[in-house]
Image 1: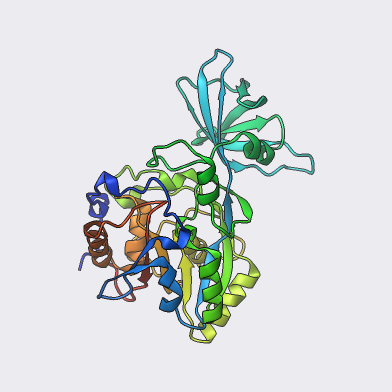
Image 2: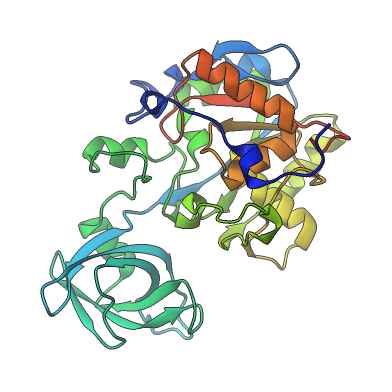
Length: 353
C-alpha cells in the first residue's frame, strides 16, 4: 500500500470532451457514481435519498457566488480584469469599500492609480494584499462592492469552461440554498440538489445543516512542486454555526452518519475540529494520511488532475480506490468538473493510501 505521495501520483488522462461545459438540463438529472464500497454502482443523482439512512445528517455549504469578475481600463487605455477575492471588513462603522482582488493586465499600474471600470465606477489601487508581498491587490471601489458586482459583474466561471457567462450560468452556477454572498467559485457538489431531492431527503428522515465557506479562486491554483509537502494552501473564510455543531453531535450520538456535501464542507468541518471555534480563516491542506474527525460520507464532483482536491478525496476514500473510480468514470463517460457528475464516497479507516 502506497504511503508517500508526489504530485504526479494524482495525475490522470482525461479526454477533453468529458469536461462539462454546461450543466445537466435538470439539476438532479446528473449521474452519481456510488463508490462507497469495493463494488461500484452507476446511479442517477435523484437516487441519493435511497442511499442514505434515517438519522444521517447532510451538511451543505450555503455560500453564495458573487459576480466577482469586473472589467475596466487604465488611464493609458489598456484593458484589465479584476476578480474580487473578498470584500474587506471596515475598521470602524464607516464603510471603506475596500476589496482584495486578482488583477489580470499586461502591465501592472502603480499604487494610487484610478481605474475606470465598465459600468461607470472607479477602482483605486492601494497596494498588495495581505502584505507588501501578498499575492492579491487591495482596491478601494467608488461605492458598495456587493452592489457594484451585482450590477456590473460577471459570473466567475472556472478557467476550463470556455464560454462567456450567460443568464443560465447566473442561475445554475449557484446552489438552490445559497444565502451568504462571498464565494468566487461554487460548491459544485451541491449544484445537483433541487427542491424535489431535498423534499425526499426530509421524508426519508435525513437531517440537514449548513456551514459557510467562501470558496476562493485559489481552489483552481495548480500545485507547482512535485513534493506536495512544499505546497501552501490559500486561505478561505468559513463559519460553522453552533446549531450545526449541535446537529453533528446529535447525529453521532444516535449512530447516524455525517455526510459532507462537497470538499469545501469537509474543509470547514475538519478545520473546526482541529482549530476550534476561534478559527474563521482556514488553509487546511488535506492529503493521504489525514485523520478525519467528523465526516463519514462525502458527496463530491470529479476534480482536476494533480489538484489539492484530488489529494483530499484520496485521503478520504483511499488513493487506490479513488484512482480506480476515476478510471471507471472515464470509461463510462461521466461528465467532469464543476458542471459535471458526482460521486458518493465513504471514509476509509486505518488507511493512508
